[in-house]
Length: 432
Image (cartoon, rainbow, N blue to C red):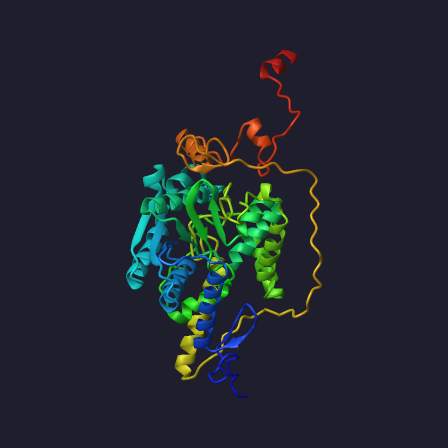
């Protein structure tokens, strides 16, 4: 049987079947079309302006490494005129983050980009190892996510940078959409699907150039480009709620490869239906980050995929790529790479006009500065300061409680139980 030609150039042999659409491509065409799609995402959303200083949230994982490599390539190819640098967060996880930061340091030399590292111990007086030793592995991602987001913003402010890019990919966004649907959190759903997020009280904005790139294609790109990255999953992340959403998304992808982008597009459509006063969007279309999703937001760096990588599945995929190349080299021939167990459903669904049925009006959240650290928050005291207070008092707080007045104005916090009565112990003793 003759080899299958590349669907783009029709000359070279097809070596890769794209997970996104099952298109058969040769290596050069795959690399070029991957970069071109990211360039189109950047241009269509006007993510950058000429001469802008950009901080890349770098963890040493495949997403941030691919992001740095692609941005460097596109910056030179299309003359973006960007000043790129790497910004990393050291959470203080021995045997994991210290090793991944060594990869980031090598990346900084390989891409000729300045590197700045900001640590939890420096900002908060706690490392994640110390936090976990006190609270255990249940709920640790809440602490890490809140701390990391603030650390990234503070690191950027320290450098005088107003734009941070993170390696969130299509799989990450689809998982976030699913998580917010399961939680019924419309305001956060609206913000999570935006490719650019910013705040009314801060000059720092964030963007996701890899928003429409599949995680598996990022692995393929990193492999065929021979990029140097760290692929170990965070030792504290398996307990995260995101894992359940990820499993659901991966199962859908096996049946329908386009499911990831379908979920992302559906999330975008639903976000447009959220009233402006609920989503926190500015009239100009600029998104306002009001609350923080501890697992959805962050530096883009807890592991091989911003802390949300499917470590086992991606590691198996990477090993398959290496094994197949070694076998092909030993046999003196090339080999195709395919993803087993996937079927492509080409049926087209009839679009249904969207409708929104809201049982009651959701109150608008108010932006303000934290009374302790000055960080942007929807409460009088930000989540990081509340968590730190619990740690410092040796009383971990995995639930963030607010006053009755604040609670009534918060559409995302769980309502406290009403009508409860507590009987004093002395009263019980008297009755006996």
